Structures are given as C-alpha cells and as structure tokens.
Image (cartoon, rainbow over all chains, first blue to last red; front, side):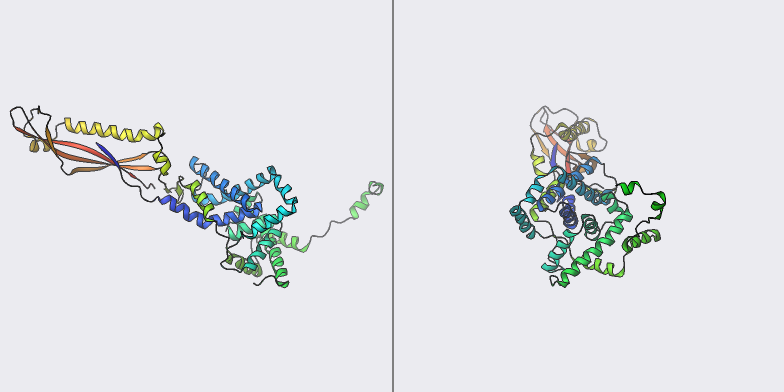
Length: 192
Length: 205
C-alpha cells in the first residue's frame, strides 16, 4: 500500500483573502487613521482587529458570514483605538514635545490618507486637513459612510449611537466639511 | 447667590427656554418626517465629489503582514460556502505534529492494509476462476509480480489533517498478477489486489 500526496493547488482562500484585503483594507485603514490620528497606531489597531476577526471566524462566533466582517472590524477598530488612548499617555507627552510633533507631521505628510488617483495633491491634503479639523463625531461618520460604504444602521451599531443620530451627524458633518473646503478654496488653497 | 435664592415661583414661570437654533430645528423636523437620512441636492453633489477620492492603498509590506494573519483562515463566500486554505509549509514540515493531525493518515493506512488483506483472503468470483491456475500454496519465495491496471477507483471521503485543510481520499484498487512456481516446478498464477490511497487537497462547499 502506498500513500501519495498530490501537489496542492493554489489555495482558493488565500487569493480570496488577498482580493478582499485589496478592496476593503484601505477603507478600514482610513477609519483606523481617523480614529488614532497616527499612522503606526492605525497599523497596530487594524492588525489587532484582523487577528480578532480571525479568532471569531475560527471559533464560529461570528454569525452572518462575510457580511458580518466589516461591521465587526469597524466596531473593533474603534474599540481598540479608544483602549489605546486610555492606556497610552505617552502620546500626550509626545504631543507636548514640539519637535516630536513636527516629526509626526512630516511623517504623516509622507503617508497621505487618500490615493493620488482622482484628485490632485492639494485637494487631498486639504480634505485630509479638513477631516482632521472636524469634531471626531462627525468625521468618523463621514469616513464610515463615504469610504466605508456602511449604512447608518451599521454606523450606529459600530459607534453605539442610534441610526438617526448617525444620519444627522453625517448631514452636519458634510456641511461642515464643505464649508471648510470652501474656505480653503476662497483662500486659493484648493482647486475643485 | 442670594438673588437666585430669593427668586419667586412667578419669576421662574416668566423665564422661557431658549429658542432652538435653525439647524437643530431642521434636524428634529427631519426626524419627525422620517427623512433624516435624506440629503439635499447640494449634499448629494458634495458626497459624489468625495466618493471620487479613494483611500490610500496599504503599503505592500503591511498588506502582506495582514495576509499572513489570514492565510490559514477559511474565507466565507457566504453563510454556507467556505473556501479553505492549505496549511502553511511550516506546519506541513513540522516534526511536532499532534496526534490528532497524524491520526487520519494512520487511519487511512490501516484501512488500506485491512482492505488489501481482505481482498487477498476472500475468494472472489470470476477473477480467481480465470486467473488462478492452481489453489496450491506456492512454496518458493521467488515470485514475479506483473502489475496490472486499475480495476476500481472509488471516493473514500474527506479527512481533516489539521490547519483547516480538508483532503479527499481516493481509493484505487489494482489487480496484479503474481506468477510463482511450486515444488513440482509448475507455474502458478494468482490475481492479487493491492490498494493505493491518494489524498488530494479539497475545496469544500
């Protein structure tokens, strides 16, 4: 009796995960950056969220298949970001340090939030600045709705607010963002 | 402080709550009308402009890092269909494989041996009548085995070898012809089955 093992084909799941990451990870990373306001923290938070997702999938705790992944990840990213800020007071000390803050700004400038396609550098940087200037309760809803393509119900679930509150924050946030970008346009900083 | 403590109920009644600002009033009206999620044409236009700008792609090394976290995790196409990954090479070559991981392969081997012995010992109609010329036991160790083709192929089911990778077991029965000589120098031909199992990484729905 002989047992032979045929060569394994290319894993269908690996390529499926790769495609899924290419499609959704940039949106999740944008949300993580919006939440943490720090490039490296955002990477840590997104990776931890993915690891938690894997655990949930393996233990079968996540009901709803693939449709449940993104809502879970947005909720987890937000929770991890809050946890990070609660326990990490080094950030506050670092932000008090002017030179370190400048370093952070320069680093962030090399890692923009938005892709070069579809907009010029000025537009991207102004949009990024305007989003960062918005109160977080508005910007997080805008990021989840516009780029995360989440419903108000999902946003409400992730942020622990009602969907009506999510919808009204979105409206307020859009208006405030538009106002900020219009101001930039009037100043001549932005060409839209 | 003394003025507040001396205020009368009538004076309190004369005070009026502030009028709501226009934005908040609009918001409450929209809630009451059930159209809080509806955007104005200007807001829709601005939303469309924002949608044209896409989030920055992940750095390739970070994406690879995330992918490595996911590589052994089944990918759910929907509620019922899962795509499985093959185990990583590190796991495949690991010397410290658990008993549960090794057990399925051993089980297959045991079944194969029993199957081969049973097929050899139990008389089979047709095949033996045609191919075995003598029932006497050959007493010589020198026997020629002529391999024959596959006589039967069957699906023996799916086994799990750990790492969330299922494998399909294919059972192939070969009928060899064993030619030997007895003490009298007579050639004895025997049909002898042997079984091989092939395990193939399986995509499971």
